Length: 454
Image (cartoon, rainbow, N blue to C red; front, side, top):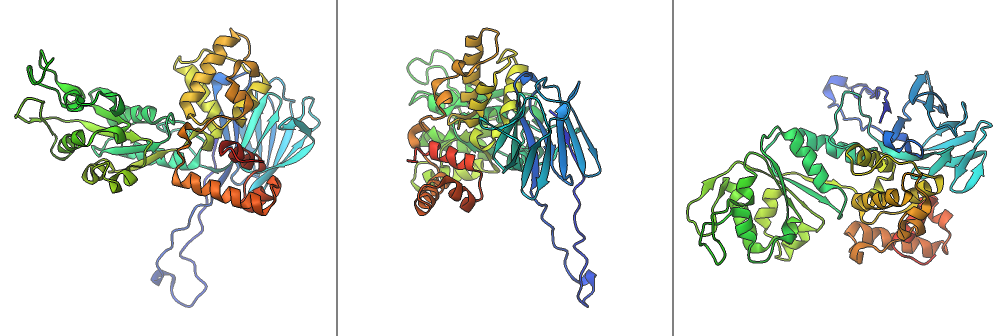
């Protein structure tokens, strides 16, 4: 993973045209404009090397081509990006930056440029849209966050908002403050919690527990331990999860599934740092960092009396959101490379059609679904390049049932707006995309995701 970075210029907020002296006017913070970036998402022959990002800041054109190594260069306002893809020509294409979009032009290459399955000589690409050159798939991203080579982000991402969230979490990692991670099922909350623990400096273990998997009636005993004879079957003393995590981090996954009775006991741990075993009256001091995660709307649960307001206030020292994979499509290559690096996926190659299917799919079960799909595909490929036929049927078809169709308020609002605009434009996707300021491909993905008639 590599980045080409350029200093960001900020105008002098102290300058003024009026007769009032500049020193008497409070300086206004100047918002940094959103940065456009071109992401190499998938290089079919080099999936183990991950994606790359060319930040299109202060550059008017980028030349794409083949070289003996991956490299990014910049001369004045022109960049050159070389990749090791053998299907690229030495000078394959030029990407011209024009406002919030780019114009991609073929430079007489042998294998051409493709938008979806159509070869084009030149084409305008909007944020969220992808194109293929050789065996390499690129995606235009409209909000990227520059990362210096010396930076060590908690997780790699080309998603600007997520990168900024990760930066805040990294600064909070050494704090004892409880953190609440919100996100859809499979979006990587536990992986993020592990990364936070790794940067915390705490010597103890990272102990994950799924609150929804503990049998009813035994939640308090599991969390806080029990004395011998405290209840039928308690044949010996047990320390419980909180004590086992002493000096480390207790990760409470699916905290929204925790019964109200156990919520009260957990609140005592957070408030006073004390735990009392079931069957005992002696509280014991314990040093434990608590990270919690859920896919549920805890604020709504508080209003409905299903979750304690005081516990929510304690857990929500800082609330972070892990975006669903459909919102960070540019990270597909980064994620696949991480699966290979940590041994969850063998080194693999991929045919173009399979890569195109990965980019088109919405991944309703997020990173977990991607991992399982790639593991199955690698096994079926048997050491050969992964073909589209090796992918799950849902990925090949580009459609999948939403998990319980449990839409967030934001998703419901988006679905309603999409229905309204489709009616206004008589189903014309191009006009709807223009009205909403989105890529046509994105509108098509939303239509598939919400299962709307076309």
